[in-house]
Structures are given as C-alpha cells and as structure tokens.
Length: 380
Image (cartoon, rainbow, N blue to C red):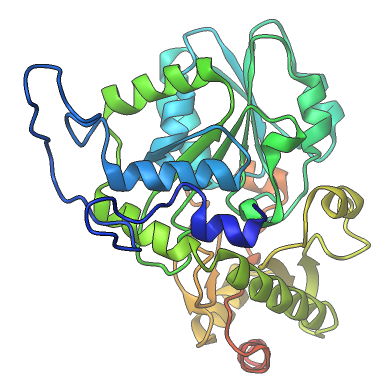
C-alpha cells in the first residue's frame, strides 16, 4: 500500500464482533479466561490491549517496520530505549536535542553509570571520533529540536559498531516525510503527541523496529516497567493518523511560506529551516526527506531574551504553548520552555541562544499566520 492508504488501512480491520469501521475503545483492565492460560491473546491491559494493538500495527506499517510498541508518553519510549543499557555503556547523542531527552539522559541514567557524549551530528565525523568498544547506543534527532539541523541517517548507520543500537527520533519529520528504518536505523522513536496524533489532545509515545531481538527486549521493558497508554489515547491517535498525509502537506506548505517571509524580514537576523539551499545540511535533507516540514526557528536582530518574550507574548494565532505538530500553530521560547532543563552554557555552545523562537506552523490560512507574525515583530 502507498502511504495515504496505509494511514487508513494498515493494521486496521473492521471490528469482528459488530463490523464497526472504527476501532473500538476496549476500556477494560482485564480479560476473562476459559481456564488458566486459556485466553484469546489478552490477559491484562498493561500487557496487551486490542485498541493499542491496532495502533502499534498501524505505526509499524507507516515506518516500514515489522513491529511497534506504544508508551504512555514519548519520554516513556525514550526511557525504555535507555534501559537497554547497562553500567559502563556509552551513548552518543545529538547535542542539539529535546530538553526532556537531555534531562533523562543526564539526570536519571548517568546516575546508573551510563556515559553520554553529546556531539554535533550534522558532521558525522564528530560521531566517528566518539565511537569506542563501549558504544552501545547512537541517539539522533533529525531534524533536530530546535535548530533544525539535519543528520545523515545512512552515514550514521554505516558507522554503528557491532552490538550497538541506532535509534532516530523521527518526531519532527513524521513517517510521512522520512523513514529512518529504510536508511539503516534499528529503531524509530516518536512522540505520537505531535504530528502523528496531530490535534493536541493526546500524550503518547512509540517505538518501531524490525529486529526480533530488540522487540523481545523492549516488549519486556514495556510490560515490566508499565509506561503503557490507555485505550482512549490509542483511539485518538488512530483517528488522528488517518489525516496525517493531508495535514503534513499543509504543514510543509505553511512552513515554507513562513520561513521565506521571515528570511526577508528586517527584524529577523537568522532563520533555521532545512529547505533553504544555504542550509548546511540542505542536500542531505533533500535526499532523505520528502519535504522540509512545518517547523521553523528564528532569531531576532535584537538578540535579547526580552525581545523574544515580547514577540511571543504578542503573537495571537501562534499560541504560546509547549509541544508542536498540532493543527493549530504554536510558538515557544526554547531557552525557558522546552530546553530549560539544559544548562545555559551547554545551550549556548550548541547554538541555542536566548533570542531563539521556535514555530510549529499549523494548517491555518497562511495569510493570517504571516499577518500575525508581522504584527508581533512590529512591537520590537
């Protein structure tokens, strides 16, 4: 099936009991057994739930994997991957990454003896220089959050040492724009909360892969540690995914228009968007992505935090809120919001300045979005 058909049909069948075309919400904690261990594949909803099974199968198909696992949050999915490590193992991760990922790596798992190296992965030589026999996980985001650097997935896959796991956070791209498993990754992670569900009404995470060994290890962690989503959230994600291809097309169109407009704006000093031919990783983005996405970040010529706060507080259609990828446009100040858990010195070294503003362009009329930006920028 092609992608637009997969979102509607892959892993999804009419309910066998009633013929309902929509996947039912199996709001149950347990399942009746005919006799001990004689059941219909479901025993307890932490372990399995029919609504969750449909979502997992659908996500696996969208990423061209063979299995999917869903978690109560994107952080739950990241936590499960980190639990594949043991004391003394080393992890190489993107230095420009989501603050929550940085926080769980440094504030939780460093305490268990796992060593993390954060490098600029837009130059794969930086990764190669950190690889050692102790490297057991390579963690990449592409596009990165919030500087929208692009990482060459195929090149990183070629560097992966034997016995290590290569995981790509594909949240910013979604499976509509990019499929890391096809480029050599072992695992794909999604904050399903974002573009996949797409309507700012559910919090959920997912992992997708192909290898049976990884599936067994991660399924054990999923069930044992219990960060599993409820059936209502899974239902909402299934419903949201049905329009993923249509939404992503508009996100990309609006993202491009916003990026081009900001690039020529007299109050703006720099715009981060991988669709620019001047973007240092543009050719890689063009090769591994279908389009360039709906995320745009920019800096003001007045590089103070106060100026950024003034713009963010004046925007109206771009709602000031955490998260991204919903149908409504959102704006944020990474330094004090999504990346506040990263020490300022570390942020600045990665290029994440205090005046940086991150936009998640929604699917509104682009004329209204540009007018909103112009009005806010006129105040500084």
